[in-house]
Image 1 (tube, helix red, strand yellow):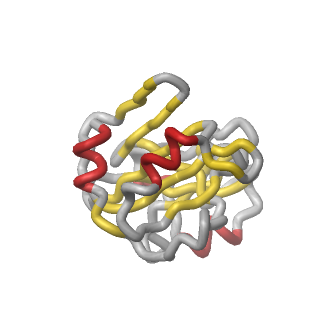
Image 2 (cartoon, rainbow, N blue to C red; image 1 turned 90 degrees about the horizontal axis):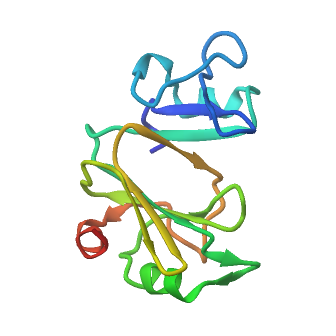
Image 3 (spheres, rainbow, N blue to C red; image 1 turned 90 degrees about the vertical axis):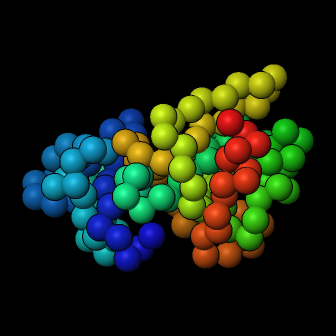
Amino acid sequence: MTRRSQWVRYSDRKVPLSARGPRRAPASSTDPETWSSYSAAKRSKAGAGFGFVLSPVDRLVCIDLDHALVGDVLAGWARAIVDRMPHTYIEVSPSGTGLHIWGYGTVGRGRRIRRGEACVEVYDRGRYITVTGKPFEGAPSSLADLSKVLDDLL
């Protein structure tokens, strides 16, 4: 992911910001002209953090597990999902209560799935996802094919 120029900054309200040009210039999850390299986004002081823009061209997908962590304990519903994952990058979200699972796959239209206390969002395009660089449970820095898990979730 760090080799791709699909990076943005984001405000404290999670509004995407461009790392190019004037501070606090808006970015768009659908306009590559507002995206930057990883190094430029990391160097930029705009906003509160940085994120990665999903584009259907590269087949990258993110599974977002909201409210999956209570302290350092993973909720049972989230553990059932994480345990089915191939060896892929998983990180703790900026809130410290969610997980972002990164890999390859195709979703098409993004989805928000609610089942009981589970809240899962799945996207592969037209969105940016915040990135913390805080791996969960020693996750690898490599990405795996998540197609089987996506089929099961969707």
